[in-house]
Image (cartoon, rainbow over all chains, first blue to last red; front, side):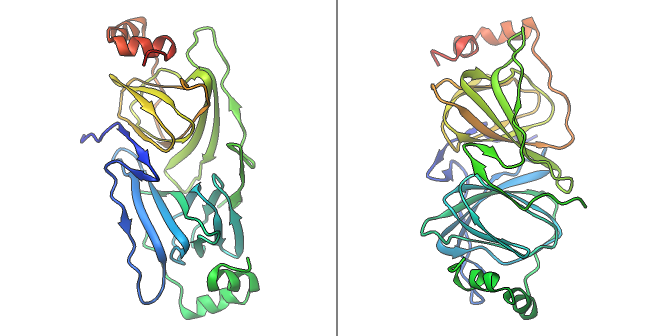
Length: 153
Length: 153
């Protein structure tokens, strides 16, 4: 089996030998100011651990999928939407995203929001919301405020 | 599918609804002052995420097993032994424990050493070292100092 390094040092939420993958901004504004680092993708394990960091004011993609997300907030604070719930997040909080549940993370607190996300190695592709899905979500005033700019939540 | 809470708050490295399991000290001094919390054990995922915390001066079991450990230091600093390597650990550092490799974590810095550990749900039981295994490890002066009391490393 190929063997990676046993120890990788961290500095400022960047890790030795781990590439920082910036998400490109796109016209649809599906996400904003998010980077991704794959911390563990070990062929002998059945799940991966990734680190996502959302810059202040940024947000992750609003999406859903069959596979679950297990999240631990590693840095900073912010808010998330999971299903019909908007929650305030602090460092070390845990979030469980159930199957086929709309979710988004937002760095609403003027600081980066960094989180670990554990997922199965083999997983389905994310689904994006249709205009109708967004409209349905926005019927809830709190969710509408969250999706607009994360304020008022 | 049974559905747990989507959000569990953290306070001082303890989590809502997560039991803190103290390891009993035993006569063989296999480990000392370690607690365990299972953060994610989601039947739809193939790996678990646990949090171990070693009190100052304490240490985890010296053991090996076929399954791999993927570790992120969440709190404090200390040292670990992985195979023939003794490493100084700082917060957010990553450790990968390969199959059948002796390993131990020690809170050598006068502060708690807390770490996340990702493992496959289905895994083999740890093996403990024989007296001969320990003798072999101790032939290395740095490892001997690490195993003695974590000092001089």
